[in-house]
Length: 112
Length: 114
Image 1 (tube, rainbow over the protein chains, first blue to last red):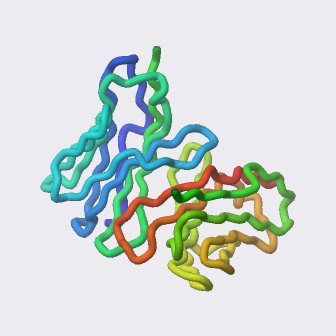
Image 2 (image 1 turned 135 degrees about the vertical axis):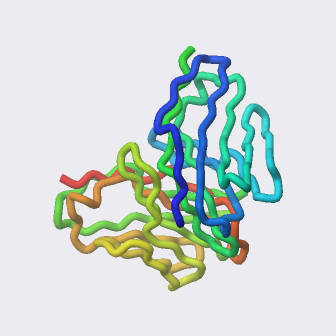
C-alpha cells in the first residue's frame, strides 16, 4: 500500500516526440506527487509536482496529469529533446509526512 | 538560496574499513535531513531521516548509522563496511515543520567496496 509503481522501466523517443511515464499508487492518503529528473552521476532534481486537488499542471514542456479516481499520475514531456535523456522518478508523500516514497525510475533516451 | 554539499564525490574502501560521509546544508535553518542509497540502475531507498539535532529515524536495519551533530550537518557512518554497502549515497533536505514538501538532493557519493 506504500508503494508507487512506475512504468515503463525504459523509454526511447525520437527528438520532437512526446515522452509519457506513468505511475500508480494504492494509498489514498498520498497527497503530494513530485517528479524528479536525474542525470548520470548527479542527484535527482525536482522537476514538477502536483497535489490531488488539481488534475493537470504544466511547466514549459513538462506536464503532470493526475487521475484521482484511477489513482494514477503521469509525466508528459512534449517536444522531447536529447538533453531530456535522463532517469525520471515519480514519488508520493503521505498527508502529514516528511518522507517521499519513490517509484523505481524510468530511463529515457531521446534520439536525435 | 539554499545549497547542499556532499563529500567526497567518490570513495573506494576495503571491506571491514570504517566509513564517514558528510552532508551540509547552507541557506536554511532547521531543515529535515535525509540519507538515501541508490543501487545501480535502481530507485532510491530511504536509510535515515532527521527532523532536528540529535534526532535520527532509521528506516532500514543495516550496517550503517547516522548522526546530526549540528543543525545543518548530517553524517552517515559505518564501523565495518560490507560488500553490500556499495552504492550511490544521496543526502537531501526539506523545510522543517512543513509536510508534503519537495526534497532537494546533493550530488551524491559513489561508494565502492573492494
